[in-house]
Image (cartoon, rainbow, N blue to C red; front, side, top):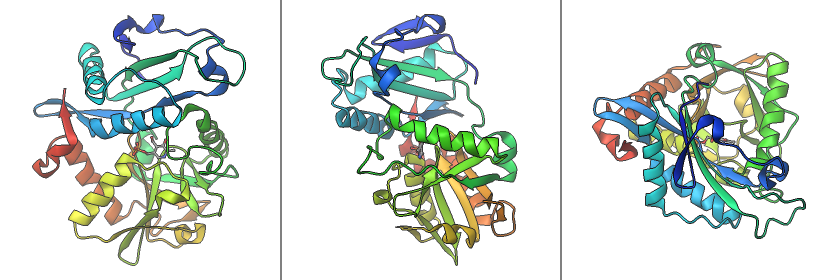
Length: 303
Ligand SMILES: Cc1ncc(COP(=O)(O)O)c(C=O)c1O
């Protein structure tokens, strides 16, 4: 990660070094925050943000889940994100975060002041260039994806990411690139920070939203692109065995983009190399986000 110069906090830009909170900030101790992860890309017509409004809508939805009073409209948030990109020189990832910044001990979040910060960084490849080009190894985690009855699985709430962190850490310590999490029913949910797809017998499948996944914006884009290319894309229950016996497995996420999973729990998937369909979708996605396909201009917001 490469840091940038300025961070937007509650309507003002501050230097990176000055963006600080108190050690008793409620969010720091109890995870009471919500966030987004958004990508910006260079295009022929300048920098464009991919599906900015959809990310902002999801952020506002997460604020509603947490009963945060966010005094900005969708349009104002979009503009603040664009301003943050403009003011900083080298940016490819933007992370807005709304959190309870007030100093408070005790779980009751009611009345604790909220802060809204928009950080931007240069991330480059999230899972590493090697994984992106040659495919990643997945490990099924012993940590389950927090399910809808226990946590707001469909909202990017800071506190529930501790499960993703544990899953990711365990996978990395065992030499895998990424962790796969199952849900309460033992079906495939998603990876620590990505949704998952399989390609099997000519069709594309991805876990359904009711299976305690985050409804990924990249996932949604992939389904639309795949259907436009003539594939059937089906949201359904997926078992671990479906994964082991798939012709292809790949992950989708704003940070990871589209990355093949060439092995799961030490078992090679298909040929053990990134598959044809995943590669086709990844190439199409790479073109779309860089403004090279006019059909999908609707997803780009110029800075
Ligand atoms: C747990 C989890 N699943 C899936 C995703 C992918 O979502 P998106 O494509 O909207 O980035 C993310 C990324 O934010 C995530 O954190």
